Length: 314
Image (cartoon, rainbow, N blue to C red; front, side, top):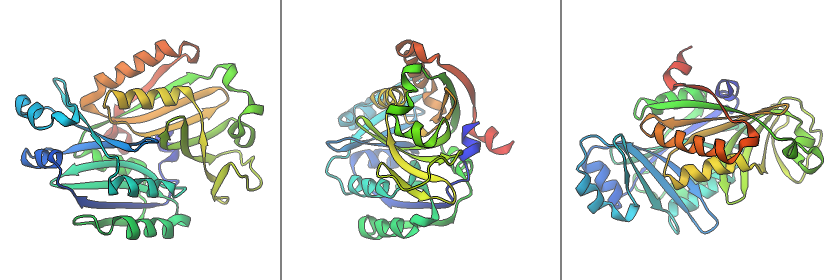
């Protein structure tokens, strides 16, 4: 299981919070709603996807109050999109992601505060601290809630799942031969065909990720890759993968929060794992079903689905 293999590799964790007061935050606070978010960056700006449970909500009031956020309402959930272009938060979020080892695990809005969960490698501690001091210290009621040794990705998701129930989904595929041309792919050429990676973000056709190199084929520093820790075999670079790009884009279009997006390659078996709020699982599996039709050559197979709590406890 991918999530267990990479859970404790990044050794530091930070959780920080701040307050905001746009109409969407006021609505969530007034109605006592906890929401989970996914932040997406685009070349022109960025946006935040909100998912929260549709329980005891006045749908007429929701559409009237939050019409600017394109609300999509199902029997289980509400999905919204907030434009972040030109905001101080988007600028700070981009700065955090520029730190090579930083992986944003999740964002919660609860009780009037946003809580940002992230992990990173200890070599980048000063860089993370500088971003927090330079970009976020002036945010309303900013506070660092935790900064220290990471208890692992599973522990983080279990904490988030206590507020918003989460499901872990792992998908196996067979990579078509046309995508396994080592000479044309620096990742395959230098890291081989046995590695794990965690998605940092997708920016149009460029996807950046933190790589965990099992075979240690990489010997020296290369321009195309950031070496985070040679000792721990951790690197950061961009890659291209049409299936991953499709999943992320379609989830965003459908306003579905997906967390994690860990991946693994062994030979030509490529696996994708993600964590999805339980309330939007039908919408997520609609994306999976469409992907299986769009990428028939990849032979997509659902390998594992379970509650996060079950993964963390066994």
